[in-house]
Amino acid sequence: MSEPLTLYKLIILYMLEKVDFPLTNAQISGFVLDKGYTTYFHLQQAISELIDSELIESKTIRNSSYFEITAQGRQTLSYFEDQISDEIKSDISTFFKENIIQMREELSAVADYYKSEVEGYQVRCRLKKNDFSVVDLTIAVPTEEAAAAVCMNWKEKSQDIYENLIEFLM
Image 1 (cartoon, helix red, strand yellow):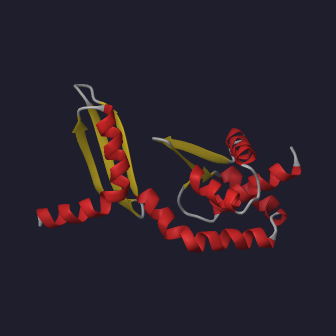
Image 2 (spheres, helix red, strand yellow):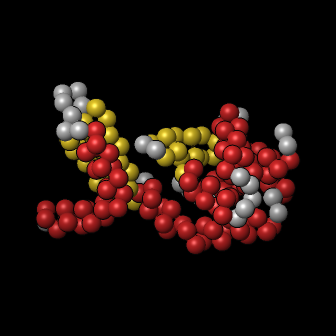
């Protein structure tokens, strides 16, 4: 294992250890690539090797991969965290301070769809706050295109839909 790849893995583990929710591939990539630490290819190689060695877990929903650190990953990080420079740790801390609200909001509105047993598709839209489900809604739509559109729009409009729903029902 080359030394730079080891550092990239430690950065990923450190990032995942510092938050209490899963990070997406886009969020991790956004930080690492914006700072110029490595290329997209090397970052994806590091992520893949972390998954293979069970130091992180991956879950894919629609087109997004979500990552969480495992107990084994936490233990490994505790042994090697001192190999991450204070400057990099500071960059990570600043990144989270500037982006944490947006990152949490991206996770709070989740939508997925599947083929219905009868006809069309079922779209499940959820809005969560601190792991508590505020809205859990399943909608039937006629086509896969419609299902994909509902999933995309849910992320942007879920808060407004929730507020209108509460107002309408009360």
